[in-house]
Image (cartoon, rainbow, N blue to C red):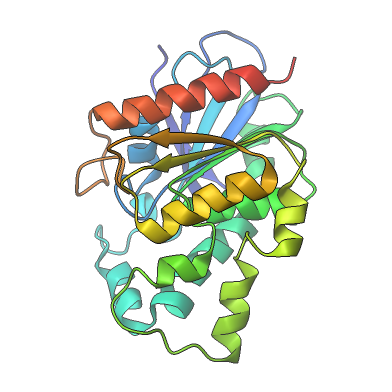
Length: 263
């Protein structure tokens, strides 16, 4: 088993797990949660998908991992208090999606990945990024997967205390990341094989969205009994031993991507 490779791709930190074999191999890009595991390195440890003949390159979300301010999540938490949607959730997901094309090009320059379709995987807020790649770009994708994902941004906003004071701008923002909306669902249907992994103990709104997306798009659904929202213990920043329930998720992802690898 090769050790992880760390670096940056067009300014985006990454943790890359090489395939077992030599030569160019397919690429799977991932975006981590903002709950634990909340960094690219920690997400790679929680869901390594060992044994896949593919590169698994875990990209860092804004202000997480190597991009934390002063080595902590305090600056991010200040943004939550300022405006959970317009200062935190929406700009983080939007920035990560906008960084994707340049990061992909840089990874292809740095690593011996093939130039064929890619796989995408997103957990929690990172799921919104993976969905944006699937629904909002023409990049060839051989398969996509979501884990306890942000499928409707409004559902994530509702997890925070109080009634959010929507206005025209924030309504537009939240609707732009509603992947159960008709046009977004249409774009996802038939785009690429899709696996929706949902913990049976996830937040009820996110669980409902996962079931609805699988039903609307014909995606595969993998329900994990006993799994709540996180995949790792707190603080979830550094790599940690894989938890038993994360191992179940990892096994499901590995089997799914193996079935759909090009060639």
